[in-house]
Length: 381
Image 1 (tube, rainbow, N blue to C red):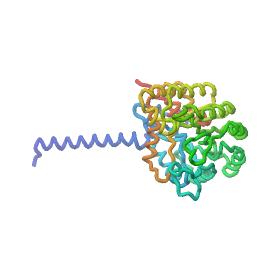
Image 2 (image 1 turned 60 degrees about the vertical axis):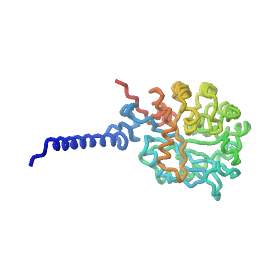
Image 3 (image 1 turned 90 degrees about the vertical axis):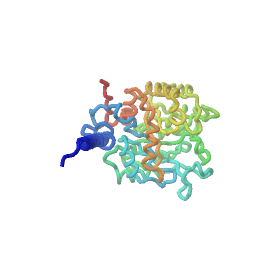
Image 4 (image 1 turned 180 degrees about the horizontal axis):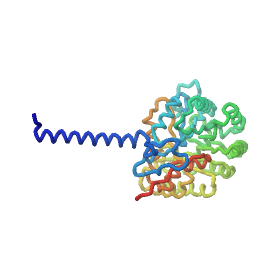
């Protein structure tokens, strides 16, 4: 029995659609889930950053970075997402390199509080607890597909005298495992209600011993230091300026470009002028663009974005990307994915040179003297 001509045409059309669907599924897998044989387009392997690799096609590959220099694997209350699960979060994105921060300032172990902002009066105090948990996890669960750099976050910048002894303790317990210090707080207004006080100019002079030790070990230090607030835009700037003046040879990373929730309305011309002046004056200073407040308050506005993009293009060798994700036990992969995307949005507007330096990790590799190399940007035909 012969099929009618109309029915035959319908069946042939369905077959063609199935073939197109199969090709679409294959393309989707190659671009979003699985790395192809030459490590393109989106899910490049860790090994692909050794030596020359396929060029990076910015038209088809993501703008999210391959390095997250600001990830808190431990939360303020110590009840965290498991270490291996955080690693899985990173591996499911473009990230292949990350700094493993604890959080050095923790809530009391016997406290029921999980968010210090909701518990005014509850102290948030410097401690080694998170760092040692991170180190133990690194020894037991070191991943094969990520390069993780462990950081010491315990330092109390207003009481620096014990720092050297504790650094030596870390080295005895976990030799060769730590290669960074921070994020540590010079001044963090968000914790003022939890008994945090800024380090004083006199305190900063007492950093000399541990800053010398950081130079000897060639460790960078990430410092959280608020520039000011909405009432006084440069209230705390002299503290960071003093730290830079006293320790110009240290590799200092200024977290969040100095901004905070308390400073949501800073004049961007003033902000960029301050950062430009200090970057010009101190060649070892770098900035990180972690924390979504930068996009929420500043980068998301087109008129602001143009100026920050021009600034980042000009100082492209002085900037590091980061999500500022905190591994609170209730945070999911979608939370990490969203924080990474929001903190990376500005990267899509950078020129190719800045994108390679910042998003593709060249600055990070240079800072830590790593034997890795950022891929070159594909030339447009």
